[in-house]
Amino acid sequence: MSRKIALILSLFLIPVFIWGQGLNNNYPFDDNDLKNIFEMQGINTFKFPFNLNQGEYISLSYSIYEDGIEKEKHNPIEDLQIEAEITFNQHISRQDAVVFHRLYFMNQGDSIINFRAVFPGISMNKKIDISRVKTGSFTANLNIDSNLPVKKDILYYYGLFSESEKYVQSGSWLECATGLSSEELIKTYDFAVIFYVERITKERAKTILKEEYYKSQTVQ
Image (cartoon, rainbow, N blue to C red; front, side, top):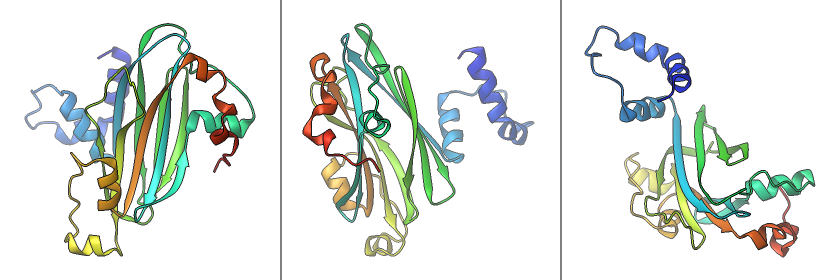
């Protein structure tokens, strides 16, 4: 861990360190400690590596489902260009490389999840309305080919509405979604957000915003 990262974490975690002072804190903090502390603070972090060739990029998209019906669909990189009426290439790989896509989520009370998507060359902030969700959680897909030969679902947020029959029948208990396909997850829970990634080839990257799907989008 670099000194800069350690300093930032130490400042962020000062209340935790103070509370634990004088207990059995002779044991050093490790990644599991930090992950658990972040989750206690309502913070979830995810990082995915991908192999890219020069001129390519990874497109992130996500769909929001309520009661099994898709309510919203977003493509952050492409949406930003459409909304701003500009074309940029900061996210396109300058060379053959392994790149990381990072997603950071922070709960804002009980109604909003703020998340920051950090891609090579660009980052952006988005919000997801969870005001109807009584209990929710994240899970990630662990079986992702870093070469990304096809579009792939990588991450899920899922939850139950307080007024739903599923919530009542569950006894207020949110069952883990690990092992469920995206289709099963959408059917099982009242609320689901499915995140996808797709490799955009060098040739397609030049013309992707001219595709009929993107031309017809109204950015929300």
